[in-house]
Length: 115
Image (cartoon, rainbow, N blue to C red; front, side):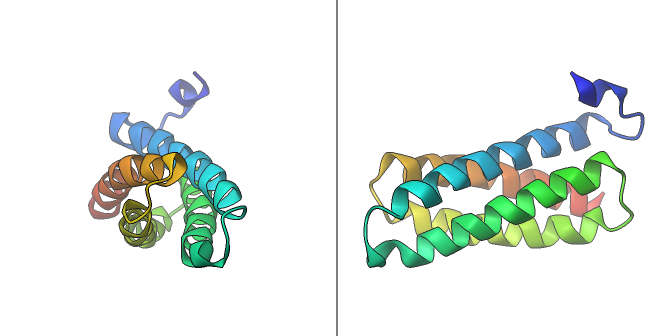
């Protein structure tokens, strides 16, 4: 795995990068699927798109050892939690996948923010 070559990335950071990339992927899937389900899914779509963007950005900032990744990690954690709460309210497979994956991302981002 390429992350093994990141000298600055310990196991905790590598796990957070993986969780952020998983969150970005599941949120892109969810937002795309929700787009076909009507206006009542607008909030879910917006939150999923925000999480996809910030989670992928957070992963990139950690990979390049940005001095600001901790601050971004806290914002990413907050968005993941809010999006997971929204997705929990919907029975769709993609929403339930978000509700399952996003808390893991939030937890690891919080740990990185406090490290």
